[in-house]
Length: 443
Image (tube, rainbow, N blue to C red; front, side, top):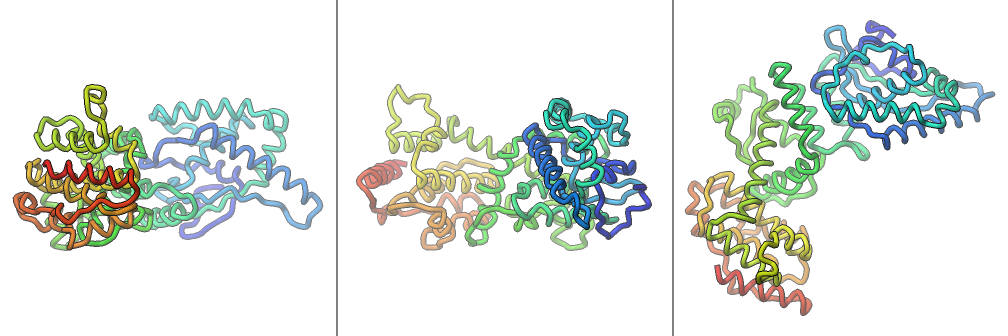
């Protein structure tokens, strides 16, 4: 098919070969690198073999058997068709076509893959396809499948915003992508930087461990955002990505102009400008969280020395034998309840430091006692318990208090009473709670 045959705002069904034969296809700069591995390729090839086998069952049927292999979203842009969704599948089909027909032509073969991971995956996947026994013994059947049996639904739009709306909805069903992947796609579309700067932003993002980004949103940014409003938090899914879509730079609203003027500063519960600022914001909080975790482990600040001692005494990790034992190791080998309250402490410390940029002894002590004392008095501790206590005014709604505080002294003056705390539960849990209570009183 030719470029003119793809009409905006319509969906068409094409054979895989018809799609790949279109020379207007283009991989836009904002696309992430090719990340399919041999595992993904193997699954696709075996799906194709199933389609070939199923087709044989309908040899004498009155209809032509088709096997749907996904949906492709294309943005009609400057006489080109930018691939918004389906890039991984399209590149893999191109590798397959190269094996089946060495002379097959596609302008996508000219694309400059400058990402090392993408280049390695292309090389490995191509060699795997060449060595795949089912193809070596059955090339004609695979060629016929690409040409006649395998079918894709292609959605064409001429508005990039609409393209990403479709991308969001396509990937928010089933297994889908991480919410932060959808946010990445959203913010890439509004980048106004030059080509080299776009490459730098994309490569930096792709070289960051996706689990670290997921952890940042799921366990820190999103819960803190909710708790500052005295609202319970739940699992961060694509349903909530609007919170992090930012503000249009051209917005006429007063709050938007105020946000533009305070760049490049960020606050966890405050908006930011869409596009480049999203990537800067994520990088900023990944670094800040890493710094805070390092301070908890190593800082010479007196309060952190005492916090480390409280945890080691409570969990029986004292003495020369455990001198170099990391707090992270101790917490990770603790009960779920202990992990919950320690992560709550990291959340509230992150929010406090984000706003006031200091480790005032009294303030940090209050945050630690407030979070850790939730472990005392409950037979078992769940996320529901953490939610309830994080926003309960009777227990001090600490995130709300930090949010409204004008100076850090207001947090330093807050005190969480330990007098009413009483250990409960099984003998083992009760003994740990009693020890924790005793240690908290030493701060």
